[in-house]
Length: 392
Image 1 (spheres, rainbow, N blue to C red):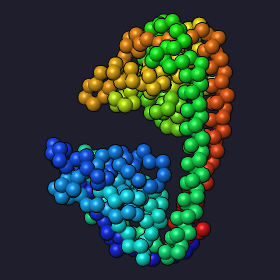
Image 2 (spheres, helix red, strand yellow; image 1 turned 90 degrees about the horizontal axis):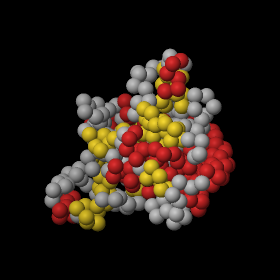
Image 3 (cartoon, rainbow, N blue to C red; image 1 turned 180 degrees about the horizontal axis):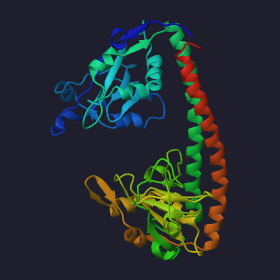
Image 4 (cartoon, one colour; image 1 turned 90 degrees about the vertical axis):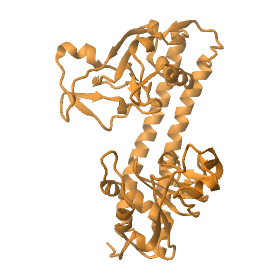
């Protein structure tokens, strides 16, 4: 392990906080100055920020404490959440959720700082304070020490880590393409559900179901007989994510009510407005329990669950569900009666089963890509650790 000198971040970069012009003054907005929020960084597919959805005017900039950051600054979200990072490729201002770095490139390369901040996210999150939400203050950020190799070594480390992240990005792109294929297959076989061009009979979703039941409200624990599926176990794209599970014991008399089996569909009935209605299909052999914010949809023998799950995850259904949901104290809700009343074109069972067969093939391809991505993630974490220990 190499012994690199420790340098405070404010000794090798200028730290700039962000601000927001008054949203009630129209002349401050819709200008030509990029203005970033933490959400803009969460959607990035690369380290670089090339544009922002919202822009401010010169007047807006002059009437708040924001500052235009030069190209190749490092943007760091210091609250809600802490630790998102990007390098701007266009001059950019940010809101108050940032502590940004303008590196002195004779000492610190932006690409090296980007990767260092990414690698230290857990440490940086622990530095946050606040009653309502955690935030890392400018004073705290200024005092952070970074072990600083020579600029030449920084460039080498950043290049190696860039290559590792590029491989991860390719795997993620392959998975995204497989998701797109599933949606294309649905449209090819059944047509656009918004127009029903193949003139399938229109039913209520409830007519396709054997049952629609709510999950258990019992508290889950760290140990127990059955894993418990919660709303965070359904991804935005409709996959089941088993990386964060809690457990519970169930009396045998409650198995039928609170356990899911292969082919059951789980519908997220309560969440934020953009996430309510997330739908996943359970394909595992071993049963699991499901929590109260989920509704278990079990189809009749005349229908295939893959078809219904794909319908509920379609762009058309998402729009319908957003209009259906009711919001209470920041949370949106759709109950079992409402989801069963939703209209759906019903193709013949044989065509639904053909769709399910092809989805099974795509799921196997996804499994291969997920496994490859998991191995890459493990290797990259090791590479990150070695890089900042001077072991590359």
